[in-house]
Image (cartoon, rainbow, N blue to C red):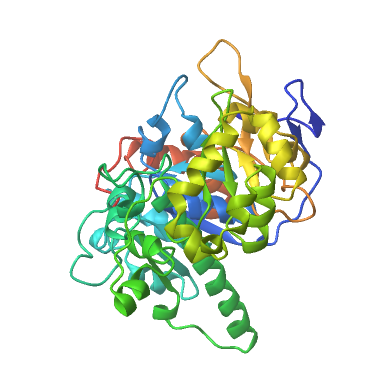
Length: 438
């Protein structure tokens, strides 16, 4: 179990403001049939802003994310983070009784979120047409590797593959080595953000049409998010540059193609900083800080295109300056001159940072970490901020099946005996289907 602190600054400096109750999506109910990160991220975002999110998990094992990066206890901090502000119920979708429960719940929901491989829900009799029969106003948000249509739609897909197929992996890393991956599942997270946005736009359209006594056709209520397309959509001008000019972008390490000087530089205390001095006016101030008037006046370096051609020379000069100063000293000089810069933070740096603390971006909860007593653990706050600080997280990811009886009794009117009978019949409370999610 996990419980929040009251509004206060704790002994480790983290602040939780529990008094705010801004919930733009209050009254929206979401049924989440999602494992891993993508659909649960969409559910988390909807829950963050007030939606009631009911997460359906496999009996016995639950979402596999519960065991990812599990360092102690029986539920990972990754699961607790991605599945905050949700309720957990266990339902076996591989049984007739389990599917009947889902259909009954759908009658009471505004949104269905899912990230099964295309065709799985249809195989279980839970496809859009079946869902539409029981709730003709339901928004159905689907996330998959390649989308619900097209020649690759039936393939399983994870974010690692999508990041490669979408063009991102080719650009990450150094040019003389194989492409590398970012340290988080960014493909899943981006897809989840798009899914949440698509869901809210559909809800907005539904509200407007309903006000005019119109009903939205099913095809306009199905939000189809493909992991590879979510990545492609954030690749900026990768495709137009290729088609217009034949440019094939390549990996450039810590730089950004066509922008200079902008890179990571090591300091005297072995820490590194990021400096972005690529604006024309900024570049002049930047060179003054590092005492290189010769570079500031060089005709070849007066615009970004020229600076990119001479990026190696510029980075060498900047690196010679940063290595003579500690991280704190270098940042002090640069900030005084208005040069965009910043430290490269570890988790410890983030927890100690006053800016994050001021905006309530690390919020403490007492959680089970596998020790004899629960521990106060900080979790990332809610983005975007409304009202000067992050809204308070209402709860971190729940224990498996924590809300099964509550949901089935309150929404479906089931008695304790009926829930017990359903559990005994393997509809809830026993090991469920292990179908591939994507």
